Length: 288
View 1 (tube, rainbow, N blue to C red):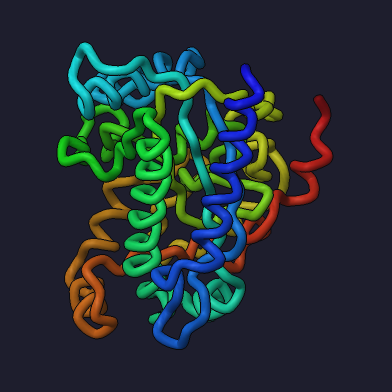
View 2 (tube, rainbow, N blue to C red; view 1 turned 90 degrees about the vertical axis):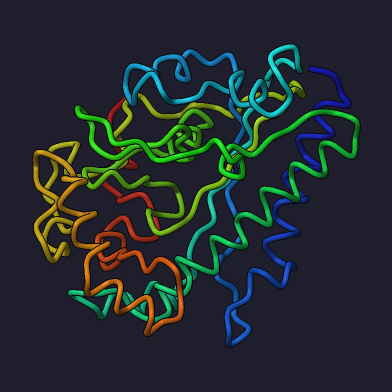
């Protein structure tokens, strides 16, 4: 990796952090931010994880090379790096959702909708920054071809998973509830951009893909199970169909009207849990 590539890596980290801190789209109706300072990581597009995801998630899941091929054509640039970020939801919003036990708080629901609009702004800002340098980049979640997929084996999935990209970038591990536990916890949104620019991959510090989840490590926890109002989380994992039937059901449609948002979300299993804003201590001290 050249000094120029190292400089771009640092410049991108600064760019992402600056946008989170200063972009007006990261401000709620009371002028408070949706997100705290981000975590940023980098994965090599050649990491074999991306090929393995075609077996783990499904053959429909894009590799980084397929992302750029869709954006620029089959004879376009070769994918080299996946830039990933985690946007931690602010404490004020998390606290509001802790109090709930059936439906999300208004603040959580509006964060789910409007904060993800900011995430789109951030995705575009990162792409534009790289393109303005004469290089190539694409944000999979902004591509028209991106879609959700109903897979008979794993349930609801998508053609690009932000969390799986973030795992490849060393930003965290998965939970029993299918969430993604990072050093800033499980209550967050994730973003990613694929580029042809070579950048040093972040360290992958995890020896197991569910290392940060106490329940998955056989420790006493399971709090997210008790937080789910429909029992969609158990020791068997996350029942996506039951979860989605609830969160896209009539009550949530009424809430979307009440809260003036397109999608409400839920987030009860991401708040008032030991991993809400950190990696639980027992997981941090796990034996290697």
